[in-house]
Length: 353
Picture (tube, rainbow, N blue to C red):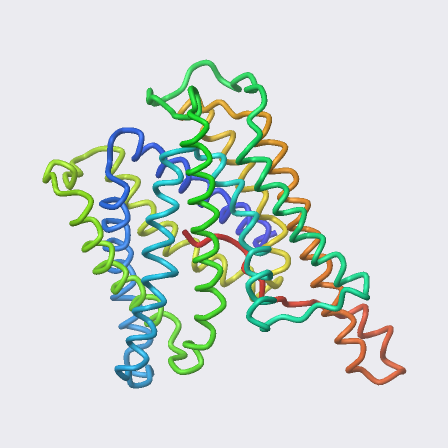
C-alpha cells in the first residue's frame, strides 16, 4: 500500500510540475530565467544533504570526471529544460504530460542505435519492442499534426485567468512546441544512457546529482543572460512564479527523486514505468481546475497511442528479461524461476524534469 501511495504521489508531483510551470510562463515569466532559478533552488536544497551523507565517503573528483559531469548537465539538463520550457509555452500542460510517455521508448531507441540494447525481430518480444517504437512515433505525429475538435471543458470556472495558446492555437507554433518537447526528451534520454558510465567512475549518487544541478545552474544562468536582458524579467516577488520555482526545485528534484528511488527498489522500474500515463490524467484534471485548459481530440488520441507504444516496448522488454532468467536457471528450476522473476529493466520510469 505504501508503494502504491508513493507511485500516485510521484505522478501527482509531475502533474503539478507541468501545470505550475505552464502557469509561470503564462503570467509572463521568462522560460530561461525560470530554468536558472529552479536549478539554483535545487542546488541549494541538495547541497547540504549530499555533503552530510556522502562528503566523507565520496571518491576524489578528478578534472576529467568534472568535465564529463559538466557536459552531461549541458546536454541532458540545461538544454533539455530550456527546450521543454519553450515547448510548454507554445503548447499546453497536458501535452507536456502526454509526451512523458515517449521517454522510455526514445531511450530504448537510442540504446538500440548506440548498440547498448539488442533486439531479435525473429522473436515475438523483439517484434513488440520495434512495434512499440513505431506506435510511439505515430502517437507523436498525431499530437503534432492532428488537432481535431476541442473537447468541452471539465469546469467553466478556474482559479487563474491566463490567455492560453491552446484556446486559440497557431498551427505552426503548436508544431514547433511539440517538436521542442520531443527533442528535449531525446536529450534527456541520451543523458539517462550516458550517466550510468559516469556513475561507475563517480558512484556517489547524491553528490553526482548535486554537481549536475550546480553546473546546470551556471549554464542556465549564462543562457538566461543572453535571452533575458531586461532586469524586470528576473524579478520573482511573492507570486505564482516564486511558488513554481520552489516547487520544481524542492518537490520535484528532492521529494520525487527520493520516492522514485524507493519505488524502484521495492517494485522495480517496470512497475513505475507502467504508471507514467497517470501523469497525463492528473494533468488534465488539475489544469482544467486551475487554468481552464481545453484539450483537443488529437491530443487525447495521440496520448492514447503513445501509451500503447510504451506498453508494447515494456512488455517486450519484460518478456526478454524473463526468458534470460529462465535460461540461467537449471532445467529443474525453470518453472520456479518463471514464478519468482521480477524483471528490472534499464528504461527510465519518469521524466525527472
